Image (tube, rainbow, N blue to C red):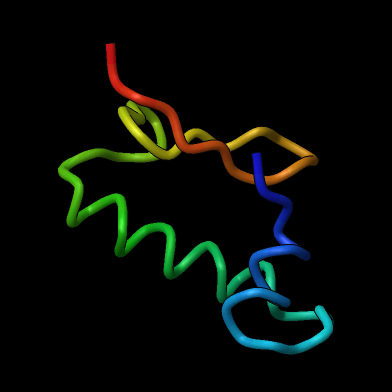
Length: 59
Protein backbone atom coordinates (compact mmCIF):
# COMPACT_ATOMS: atom_id res chain seq x y z
CA UNK A 1 0.00 0.00 0.00
CA UNK A 2 1.26 3.47 -0.87
CA UNK A 3 0.03 6.72 0.59
CA UNK A 4 -0.64 9.76 -1.57
CA UNK A 5 2.19 11.54 0.22
CA UNK A 6 4.63 8.76 -0.69
CA UNK A 7 3.53 8.92 -4.34
CA UNK A 8 4.07 12.67 -4.57
CA UNK A 9 7.50 12.44 -2.94
CA UNK A 10 8.63 9.43 -4.99
CA UNK A 11 7.30 10.48 -8.40
CA UNK A 12 7.55 14.26 -8.39
CA UNK A 13 10.28 14.67 -5.72
CA UNK A 14 8.23 17.31 -3.92
CA UNK A 15 6.65 17.69 -0.55
CA UNK A 16 2.86 17.35 -0.82
CA UNK A 17 0.75 20.49 -0.74
CA UNK A 18 -2.86 21.40 -1.44
CA UNK A 19 -3.75 20.29 -4.97
CA UNK A 20 -1.59 17.20 -5.14
CA UNK A 21 -4.55 14.95 -4.31
CA UNK A 22 -6.25 16.05 -7.52
CA UNK A 23 -3.05 15.47 -9.49
CA UNK A 24 -2.83 11.92 -8.19
CA UNK A 25 -6.52 11.31 -8.90
CA UNK A 26 -6.08 12.39 -12.53
CA UNK A 27 -3.01 10.23 -13.06
CA UNK A 28 -4.65 7.22 -11.42
CA UNK A 29 -7.70 7.73 -13.65
CA UNK A 30 -5.48 7.68 -16.75
CA UNK A 31 -3.64 4.60 -15.52
CA UNK A 32 -6.89 2.80 -14.71
CA UNK A 33 -8.20 3.60 -18.19
CA UNK A 34 -5.06 2.10 -19.74
CA UNK A 35 -5.48 -1.00 -17.57
CA UNK A 36 -9.10 -1.35 -18.67
CA UNK A 37 -10.63 -0.75 -15.26
CA UNK A 38 -12.51 1.93 -13.37
CA UNK A 39 -12.47 3.20 -9.80
CA UNK A 40 -15.86 1.59 -9.20
CA UNK A 41 -14.68 -1.79 -10.52
CA UNK A 42 -10.93 -1.98 -9.88
CA UNK A 43 -8.85 -4.98 -10.91
CA UNK A 44 -5.32 -3.82 -10.10
CA UNK A 45 -5.44 -0.39 -8.45
CA UNK A 46 -7.56 -0.31 -5.32
CA UNK A 47 -8.17 2.92 -3.43
CA UNK A 48 -7.96 2.59 0.33
CA UNK A 49 -9.99 5.52 1.55
CA UNK A 50 -8.06 7.85 3.83
CA UNK A 51 -4.82 5.92 3.29
CA UNK A 52 -3.75 5.68 -0.35
CA UNK A 53 -3.58 3.11 -3.10
CA UNK A 54 -2.94 -0.58 -3.22
CA UNK A 55 -1.75 -2.62 -6.21
CA UNK A 56 -3.20 -6.13 -6.19
CA UNK A 57 -3.05 -9.14 -8.48
CA UNK A 58 -6.48 -9.76 -10.03
CA UNK A 59 -8.35 -12.89 -9.04
